[in-house]
Image (tube, rainbow, N blue to C red; front, side):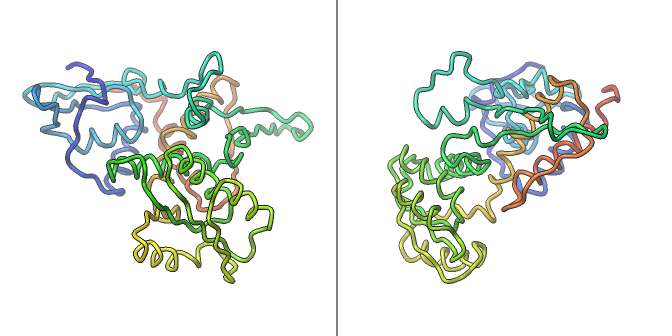
Length: 297
């Protein structure tokens, strides 16, 4: 067995969301993987255990446990796979562009609120307002959905994008469009404030205000516009990247931060939008700490 750089390995076989969740849950519960991935030396393609390879890539490991000839039954911990390596901010706060400012500025701070901690209960909050574009948790999904689209379409300039948004996700996507020279047309419901509409326009967005009150009610309309105009519809409501970015980054950050703070949380509370962050954090913590005290075989 040896450790292979994750970026040099090609996992050709596709994996469904259900398959990914099943494998990811097992890996998080065990704190590692129990077998290797068989890799062809010349092509770097995975011959066996391709779905395991794809799952590890989505979880953000640095290394893949590899073997040649056949998979080996051998436990490798998440720490040995570099599971936490990408959750490291820039030491000297120097960033090459505003996209790097986003992801290399993570983890966002975790801070104790003294005045709101009483009766034996201590409140800690994760300050997602430190994200630079929308100053919200939505920057994470705007960045990751756009990055996933770059991978799927094979180009950075995605041309015209269309999205239904109530402001924050639109601001995040607009920032990525500005960085990669694309254009966003945002469809907003009637309930969005004029301030939100103004901010989107400041970010260079073509804004279309709908008489419908809910963002989710605009999805079919936006999908039709995407088909008619040949645009890319990231669709935050049905995009798996919305969940994956929080599983790969936000949840890991929280684990590292609560360990640093020396706390054992009794509950994690979050506001709900498209719910990618809270569903990913719930999935992560329910699985990661379920069998953490047991020893690997």
